[in-house]
Image 1 (cartoon, rainbow, N blue to C red):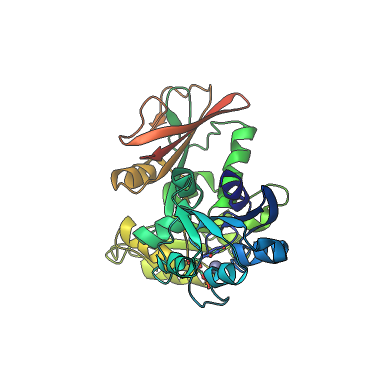
Image 2: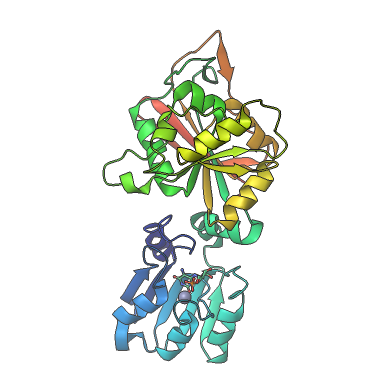
Length: 352
Ligand code: AOF
Ligand code: ZN
């Protein structure tokens, strides 16, 4: 199962809105077939692994990271394929919360006399499939908050674009962007840093996620890098339906829309996340700034926190980070510590 989970990580983020599932077919102690859900979500893992195994699947054990599907979607049910292939035993990591499947996949297997075992390496499975599980069970994307903090716990200096962490940390940020369906910043960050928020890692340029700016008053400049690149990677500006106080709102709205920016109205963060989930966004990376980070933490909407800390001291005029390695919000546990160049990197998840 550990190998099947590693296999499933290969396509994590590339199968939306389907989960990336791993399947390994074992016969007489040897792997006779293995596969991961194809990029784009289909075909599913099991049918591909069974095709590789062929006749050797008869009497074999299949290790699958998610309950095999039972529904006729764009492909026939994987549970039926396992039965037809003559598999004797199916070992599963996680039950599928998809209401079309949930329990029915196991039912098909058991009815056919297949031995079914579930729950193997469930905690690790939950981490691998966190995005899919969040959208299915909570109706919102899995939220990663990423912050770069100085040695004295600052995110930067007021009104200034300050690079706090080094090139290795920044490469990790780009990798995280590539793994998420959408990325979000506040208008303050958009104005001060004029970020592009794209993936600039060789070979992964096409993995740039949807870019979202919390922009209540629609202040995003038409000359910003975000707006200028909206043709290549879409930009969504989020305003709220009650904010009609700004005199030039209507004008700005029209200007942004004709520049190709999508305008989304959301009453609050919960409303926004629910909206993103309905359009198939399963994972969201929040990149700041301080106010936005505080908003997500305060609303209990952060699932994973990634902190990079450098040796830089910002001192006077610093913007205090709402989280630092020595001051982590309640309920988070550290699951990883790394070193990237001179920086330290910490990863925390809510619960475990
Ligand atoms: C599996 N194996 O590799 C995956 C599964 O839109 P469809 O028809 O492809 O169905 C999507 C659902 O299939 C998804 O919500 C989840 O329940 C399941 N994904 N199931 O047996 C796989 N990716
Ligand atoms: Zn399937």
